[in-house]
Amino acid sequence: MTMMMMMMKMMMMMMMMMMMMMMMMMMMMMMMMITMKMTMTTTTTPMTMTMMMTMMMTMMMTMMMMMMMMMMMMMMMMMMMMMMMMMMMMMMMMMMMMMMMKTMTRRRRRRRIVRRRRGG
Image 1 (cartoon, rainbow, N blue to C red):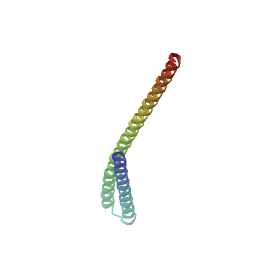
Image 2: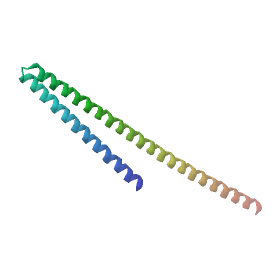
Image 3: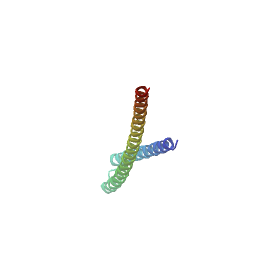
Image 4: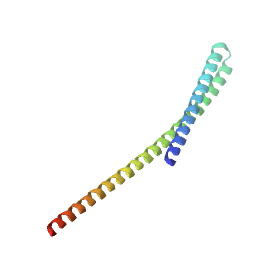
């Protein structure tokens, strides 16, 4: 149950990250569109230049944010993978142990039976 809860939480986090990224992308696109329109309409050079600069700044910021988000996502994914691997390993070990125990018990039983037969 705890593991499932953790997984759910992780998934929720991922979804949130994705949403944020999408929002950033949308904002970026909007900014670009606005800037393009401005450049198209306006004839004065300084205004366009400033707008371009602002756009560039925004773009940079958004990109940085995106990168950060991506890094976070990657980290989360790595953590998830590690957890999963650990769980799998544990399960495998348990299974192996169980199998070994079973074989040992069987062997012991067989030996006992053989001994009894010999004795009888």
